[in-house]
Length: 441
Image (cartoon, rainbow, N blue to C red; front, side, top):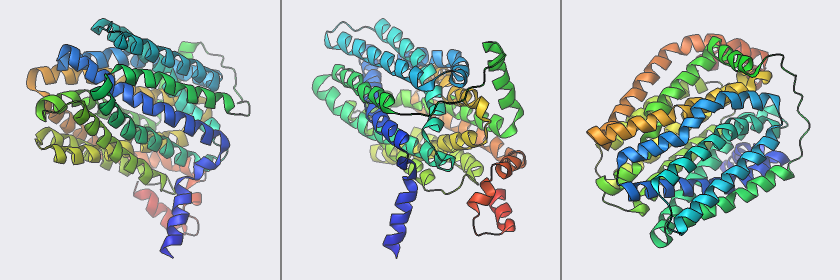
């Protein structure tokens, strides 16, 4: 009986893969993401090897992510107005070009800090359009909207499986061959996702022409997100966690080299263990049959994430830190993927691209400032103290979100009723039980 139950649960977890378009994109994107994580680890190690400066790590992170802050609102309008697949094919091709140039400069020994800054800014500009459009594109790949939450969770699983594999492989390759090979492999990894985009067959999406100017559409998206309390609260908490907590990753080379006296392999293990925990968080969400209750889980996960960062800052033992980093990965994934799932579920279809651009802006657009702040704090008070400060801020933000849960629940309840979510998730359960489950959100 238990074996049968496990089989049923396994089918439930991977149910979004039954959609052909999503399955093709999932495979292609998964291959590309491994290369992306290899490049990220190689980039951070290259910068720290050349400069030996925590501040430069933060500065490179800042210039690489700054375009996200500037251009993602525009990307949301484009996602609502134009063909998402064609835009993604262009952005993925440009990312391939960036990696190839970076590989050539490193392998030939011509690389310098200003090259890294310019190429990081270029890639940031590309991804400022790629990421929110890719978030909105997920809906186009799923024929049955009931599987949307599962698809989002599987996207997160794919992202973090790549986070597990990529840094580990990168650490070995950097030690044996240098950083250049990682950039070259990343360039090649974009080919499968471009091919996957070409193989997808989509029903033309109905786009209602907008009478507004582009700036008017951007303003409309901001007003809509601000006036709908659940969207506003989720985006604000996500933005805080991304500003104060997520940039800890730019400090991992400092922990690997100066705290634990290791090399690129140690950095790879630290990054990979974060991925292990994140995979667990994504699988946990994929196994849920309902979005009811995710609001409370967002708050709990944010508190747990902040506490993990505080513990990592205080730890001086590598194996303990690896466990804590994995727990932080679990918590951050639950918080971010649950936020994504709720937003994708409740948003009006004609504003999906703009809201998802704000979602991406919340965790990507704030990251450059967080990276710069983390680098500055690490330079002045040390990396552990910088991490400690960020963790405390995450816990405080989550506490405010906890207090807002009753208001969020009241605002989101009519949407769940309208979309049939409560009836759908409470199959065979009476109405009183439905309300009890909702109250736990």
